[in-house]
Length: 186
Ligand SMILES: [Mg+2]
Image (tube, rainbow, N blue to C red; front, side, top):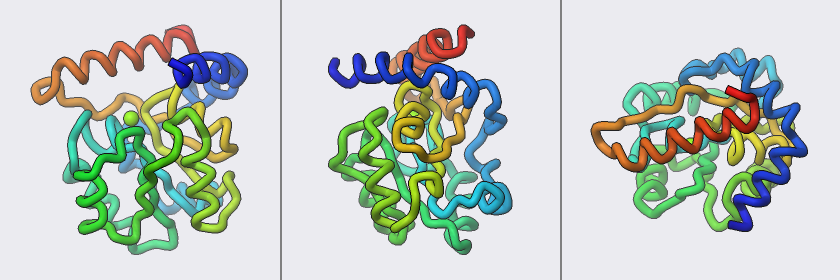
């Protein structure tokens, strides 16, 4: 509840920035984030949300095309971090095995609190503006980015699988719609 109220209050304060980010985002799939795009934005670290961005809700592993994209990115100078509000053990184990160099963030206050993003910048010894977050939620990830001073892509639409988890997916789709309605009026 505290986090919800924090999100509403800070979301209101950052409403112009969030609206601008939401309306100008052209990222419909995280795999559209290419090395040249990140370099042009002077990005050194790519922080990734999991649910809705790398896979549909509640999965342990990213979707296949995302794994291919991640494997291409790990060959570059871009550092990778995972910043999910559900950093569970199964996911940690997957990334430890498949992407051991990726920084798996856990133990910090959940987004929209900015501590996780700031910890990523600190870990890699870069400025917050050199960190780029890809997230499908306006009042968690995008707001956390505004608060931390990082760059962000609002990934929309989110990856979803209603067949696998219709209840969870429906719930989060409603949440996303309410967020969009609050922040950008549609
Ligand atoms: Mg998400």
